[in-house]
Amino acid sequence: MDSFSASSLSNLNDSDKAELQKFLANEQQRSTIQAETHKLTQTCWKKCVTSNIKNSKLDSSEETCLANCVERFLDLNSLTLKHLNNMRS
Image (cartoon, rainbow, N blue to C red):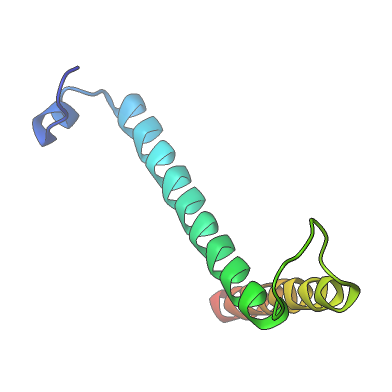
């Protein structure tokens, strides 16, 4: 497998450079989403699942807590995006 180097970029045409930049931006966005999902999972799990798991199902209070936790996270994320978009305008 060839190693990637900065000089390899100079061999790319403008279209390939743009495609590579788009790919890298998408991968960065995917990584950010995965990190946020992991953070959300940890936060909600620590908050809501307080008992020892004895079977394959959560109890109803844990399920409700997890659903509410995720909904609040999504609400906050949506409000944050709206605020950022308003700041750009």
